[in-house]
Length: 574
View 1 (cartoon, rainbow, N blue to C red):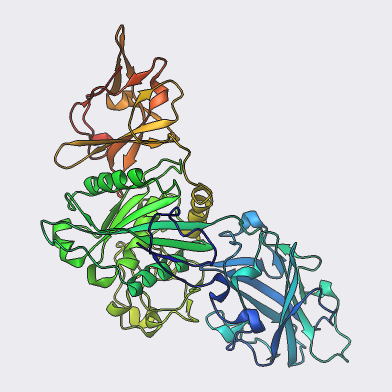
View 2: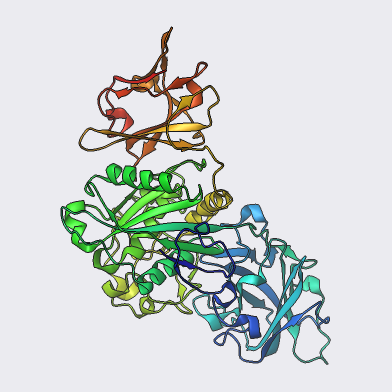
């Protein structure tokens, strides 16, 4: 197995003895982004010298006639921290800040009518439990209206931050200071300091914030007997795309031995096969398994990918998905499929997606600027004659809320004017970027799942005894050929439904008694929201100890709830 990570000294994914001889690739977290750790300067954003200083900075003279206007931090999506000089509280921001992740801080300014053009020092101060660091740059600020161009690095004050600059306790201050120490200056309350007093808490999410993926090269032998090869270069493309889009401080990837698929045209069948592999290997509840299938399989598989839509983060859930590497662009697909695995539906099927579309299906418009932390070509660069996609280094990805995508979600042709759609990755308006909405929702799931470690002994495995309070669940997956795959996972799903509405009942047969109850379950949904399986908490159907001496299910539950057959019976004998 090969592995790749972003932080040195972190858990590589397998326990000692597993993956012996693994080739480890990676980039130290302190090197992600630019060289701001040395100078605090973006070469394109400053007209003068810049530098960093550890410890409490010396007091400066607040600049007269100029005020901090808008302050933004960008770690993939733009997060406004202040607007019109007023701080934005944590609960009102479009997305959270992630500790241990690089970022771009930008600040624009406003000037009074009588402002005298001159050199201004802009100082960014980060204060944390670990200490204080200031980043200073200077530039010439002219008469109104001034540049304030958010589409370019030199249009506003810009600081690039390394991964270790932001911690869970970091607060931010921006000061506009006189470069000429002989000037009288102004009071902080006049707007040259943001916020006027103290520092604004970034409220950065601390913790692992790591996505771990086992990549399984696969093929369907009915089409091609040779699984796709995951080269180091391809592995790096997958890593870069996932890291740029997801709210993570680290990405850990491992490459599994190849897998022959039973029926790649049937998504649930592939999911069941991957789940069996994942459960047998027991890496940990935080690991995702993602199969990548070569382009030769595309027509036979009849999809670009498939994943369970995991609306629940419970430990034993099925974190499995696969994508087709058509035209070498699996990195573009796998961020989408892993998004389903993280609970994200398609944008046009998500009733809470923001910004909402009033003129047709929601094609995943984005309202904030995007920013790639790691350089390299966009996975769709070979399809679009658009230079910015060829190298994402120092490219500010423009918002797409103004794009006219009414009525369809498959991108648009007018990229000579707008550039490629670059709408949210959970749309079909590719090539993708990520919206602040999806980034925020992913952060919540990543924080929970990345906190899971290796499972306690005895979780999952064979069904065995199913006593009341049993902390395991029975998974049923219904495939296209009518067969039912079953396996056991750890934990119980949330949001249990009663099977009464669907005619689903569980019959418990013991040596001396037998009873029938409405089945309590959580649906296993495919990416379109269709029910293709059930998760049944075993201990919910006590009080006696039941075992699966025999398991039957009548019919096959496919399609939506509304189309589901009306009679099903699950029989567990004890």
